[in-house]
Length: 479
Image (cartoon, rainbow, N blue to C red; front, side):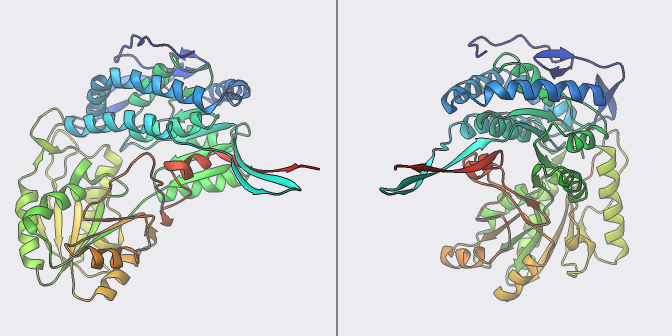
């Protein structure tokens, strides 16, 4: 099925991909451009019958695809990555329209999606000899699960879809992808692109409403769910999967802390930290959401961050000067607005922003809160929007305890010139990922997952591949 030719793709029409065919449905729906609240192109709304057909096709495809070699799957995925790379500009522009992020950030996501397809499918998953004696040889190996389902969120609809596609297909599974109803367009085009490179049923993409996810988690023909989204929905996914003991990976919310030490160079770190706080309008699970600054530099740091952030342009994604686009959808827009009002009602003081002006899109300017109490909603809640609390610290043990005082544990970072001290702090964070002098960096060969309420299981790296496999121990007798 692998072809060196690039398929012709029309980015103005959108279909499901089921069993190697483009399909539509009687009932359709549309997304909204968050920059102007205007409706976008109609997309299918799948029914239970559509899902049943897709699952049947996936199970048929799995029987053959699971017998292919890693080398064959790698070749197919690399060609698929080449196809995505060929259309990366079209995908980036589509991302701006449906997700709202600025074009430069959308281009970065498209580039990263290609890199993750290639990187994940370049990993090695070799059989391991655990014991080899005169009596027997014992081998550890991993075998594909069957039919996987990838449920993709609206903040990174292209990159996160490609991560799930690569891991599932490379390990010999078939996958059914469900894009968010808020951002279905890139996902549907990924399915259409895949028709050129994979046998029918190996990669299918279904658009639907809020009921499609529960249909998938309840379906007896699906063996694995990989879900990225909110903690509340993740709990529902896990509850549904438990009924049939489906394998499940959950990448959920984060309330990441960053600890800034007194020895940092403000001129150097302020732009990096501001980006790690407000990139993608702060709609990233592993974004800095609690910023602890040493009291010796707190006032200087606060003033410098406010000055830098206030110069970041909020605007439509195709404006080359925009750094902060709109909130992606009305639901999240209202949540962030309500959170800002609730924080102000507590009596804490925004030193930047704090007022949401009505506009043609879902725009919210950055809001920075000056040293709220640890009990404030600004500290305890994940805003998933441009709301940032700045907090003072003086004692190392105390700030580590405060950073860890959350039911979430996705990422954390420490910023310091003293790398020995930084590593000492880093190793005490209760988070799945921790960084020194950076935040939210990710690579396809590095495992990523959360502690506590931030998730179960791992994405990316060899550990992420294993999430799509059964483990098998082979005892080979020599006598």
